[in-house]
Length: 319
Length: 275
Image (cartoon, rainbow over the protein chains, first blue to last red):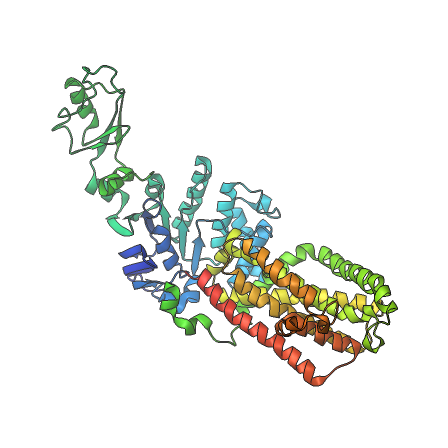
């Protein structure tokens, strides 16, 4: 690597980073840093500004205002230089249906100025890595969604990037395909590759990210490791109570008013259930029962990033 | 929009010389890689189409045209339309290639977006694909030339120069159409383009009959269309009736159209792809 910044300098640094499309503000003055070797995530619902942020980092979308450096370089002046060292997995597959699986990688290597021989060598290695070797000469079209995503990941690695940007890498995939993909990303991380990803899946963020920022309405609303965010914004456990609608007007076993007082740090009423944030879920459940509440189902679980998001924005991620 | 306000018109238009860069050659390589898969069918249709056209129009229809005294100067109808058809088929192919396949790369398969994540830029994509269209026009025109020679439809060896004229005409169409494609969301706009633009030009630019036969008010219209100039130049060369000044005017008109189209395409490509 010719111009690798010193270890102290972040790979990506954003200050007051803003993106506007006409009157619409997609990203509103965000600050963040990504260090070398880190797996960094942008967690948030659709439309939060995650993709716009990623496109600015990828130097394919001009910054409206604020400052951004990638590898210590200015995207406006050194776009091609930055992209030469970047791997990008866009939200849409953008694979070439006119070419075979192998050819998709070959030509992409040429775009990075690799020789045909070198591009072929790396392509074969990468197809091995993403387990697509037996599909090398097939067209792209008949591949499954998971295979296409893996091919896109292989494509993003052809220039041996030190930083990979992944925009919603597993959206729309079945659980098996997701786990295979996560495994490959984890291996890359172990090799020291820096990952920067967006997701609206909290489990993905928890699996892959060392550190993340929560985005909502074009702004960053919280930052930290998954564990830190949970400790800071929610309790260790959550008691989930579901109630059947009472048939009898006089039956108040589903009326929670006052009955959860003192039991929990916070109570969140959702349309389909009540979330009770507490350090000890079992104890809270027992007390609620003593006080006459008769929920149809009771579940005690550990808090997740989903709860953090709910706490921060008042909305659930899945919406 | 915001992109222009920020980047400024100068950056948007860019340096006129920086077209055939090494990066744009990579885009051409991509197109050749696709071409490699289907070159035999290109070859087959590239030879059969001109043969069928010349047989039907030049020889079949030509019997009637030649019977009524033929064309001024005793030129056979076959010799009259052969160089013109060479140019028009290169133009037609280029017009098509500048429309649907480009929109596919922008909007449907979005392969341009993948390429933009590499060191390639929007203008490299434009330049590379324009070179491919030029390459394809060259190939088709050479095949057409072979058929013309085989059928003995050229009076002068200068007919070989009809090939570069055809390629220039193809680019004069492809560049502005690519500019137009980059502002389309779907392919509905192409219907209008081909119905009211390309097809009428094909019919009324002096390919099948001299534009002097057009109503007087339509003739100036023919002069400003690039196809007229391409057809006229190729015909002069093929018939061996070259007027140097006229030829220079024709070539200049084609080059100017291509350059204006290219400048427009640089702007629309950047606006569409860099947001």
